[in-house]
Length: 245
Image (cartoon, rainbow, N blue to C red):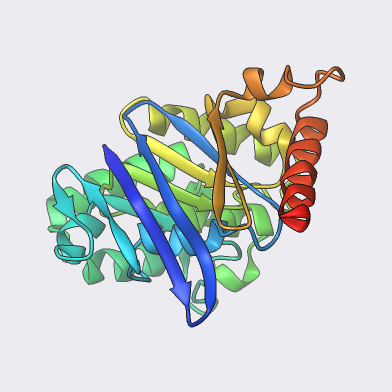
């Protein structure tokens, strides 16, 4: 569905990403992992068209996002960490406002609103101001806003941060259902989420790709059979080798 091809990104003398390549296919839920400063946020901003690469390209179905940004972004839903919302709007007003930005026809909008409101359980808060909602409901509203234009790829930054166990369970179920017809990339540091829903891991460290594997394979690289331990040891090893070099 979407290919990252030999992507590098520099900010002056700082190399944020170096020669990153991977492809995400329909049905995949890919966890993007890495310590702070690894380049995860930069990569997400490149994949959502907020930044342009220094080298390489990102392609969705033969379309280069740098050259056909508007067309490609119609296929991508992006939910940043602490997604900005309009607190004075009701949930219904916000979703309609977002739909107007995407120029969605009324009949299509009606169908999508019904689907998203049901799946994300927003019916009881549809006419309430967003500023009055709990964090869990606000998160669901952000997801609905990101999906109102019918994208095929969902990119999420720290999707379950601050959610209670019930909210996390509901979010994971929704992600699985979405991935059955599309693809999901989620950047997270919560290994519980990775083990629960991801079928693939891309691990970055210091702007480079360390590994592209499955949660199970990464977990069993270490005697503890623990994903957090594997993550910690691999990134620490990379850092130590960088210091020696």
